[in-house]
Amino acid sequence: MTELVSVIIPTIGRDSLSRVFAALARQADPGPFEVIVVVDGGSPSDVTGIAQHEQCMRVASEALQSRSGVSVARNLGVQLSKGSILGFLDDDTHPVPNWIATIRQVLADGHRGAAVGRIREVSRSTLGRLRALAYDHRDAQNTAAEMAEHVRRLHHIDDDCACRLVDYLSGGNCCVRADVFAEVGGFDPAFWVGQDRDLGQRITRARYHVSYEPSLVIEHETNSTPMAMLRGRYASGRSAHALTGGGVDPCGELVRKTYGHSPAELLRAAGSSTTVLAIASAMAYRAGHRRAASLHDREGPTGLHDREWLTSFHDREGVARR
Image (cartoon, rainbow, N blue to C red; front, side, top):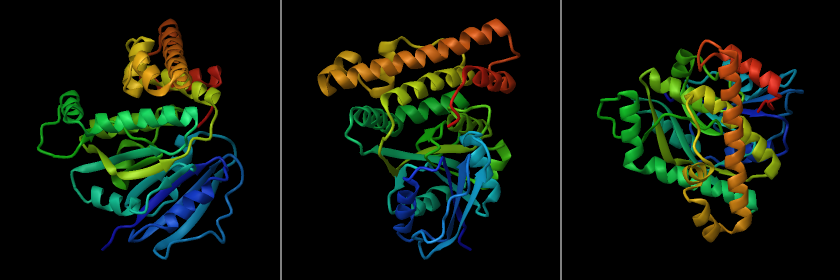
C-alpha cells in the first residue's frame, strides 16, 4: 500500500503561500498526499478554490489564536496529519516538481528516519546573493565525504549506511518519518530559532539516520530586509549556545564557515556590499551567542539544555517567534 505523505506548512499569512500551493499542484507522480496549513496567529487560511493536484487527498487549515512560534505551528500540523511520512515546507518556498516523489524514495530506506534537502536561492538582491553563497557552501560541505565521516565519529555510528549523513534539519525543506517524529517528541517550542537543528540532533541521538539529499530541492526567494536577517542571526547565536555551549569563533572564521570564503576572498568574489553584510551577520551571531553565554553563566541554570531557562531568556530578550 502506498504511504500517505503529509505536507506541513506553517505560515504567518503571507501572500507567497499561494505560490507554494501552485508548486505542489505541479508535482510529478507524487502519490497520495495531503497538505496541512497552520496559521501562526490569526484566522485559518482560506484554502477553498486553490489549485490542487489530482493525487492530493485533502487540504486542511488550522490557526493558533496568538503567535506561538513555528515549532508550535509545525507540531500542531503534525497532530492534524494522517500520513506516515511528514514533509515540511515554509510559506515562501517553492518545491521542485519531483519533491514529494523524492521524499518517498529517500524514506523508503528503512535506515533513514529523516532527510534534509538543498535550498536554491533565486533572489539577486544583495541579501539574496549572500544567502545563495551560504546555501551553496552548505551543499558543498554536505556532499563531501568528510561530513558523513565527521557525523559518524561524533555520534558513534558504526553501520554501513552509504547515505550522506548529517545531524541537522532545515524546517523549510525536510522530511521525517511520522513514527520517528513522535518518538523524539517533535519540534521543541523552547527553541524559537534553531529548532530544526535541535530536532535533527535528537533524531540522530535516537540512532536514526538523517541524510542530506541534494535531489530534494526547493527554491527560495528572499524578500526580507538586511535588518531582519541580522535580527535572525542574533537570535540564531543565542539558540546555538543552548545547542552546543562553549565559545564562538571570531568574525572572520564565522564568515568563512558560513559562506565558504574569508572576508578578503568574499570582497574579491562578491564585492563590498555583500562582504559588509556577511561581516555584520557574523557580528550579530557572535553578539547573540555571547549574550546568552553571559546570562546563562550568571544565572546558573542546571545545564546547557535547560529548556525552561531558554524560554525565559527568549521572553525577556523579546525574541521574535518564527
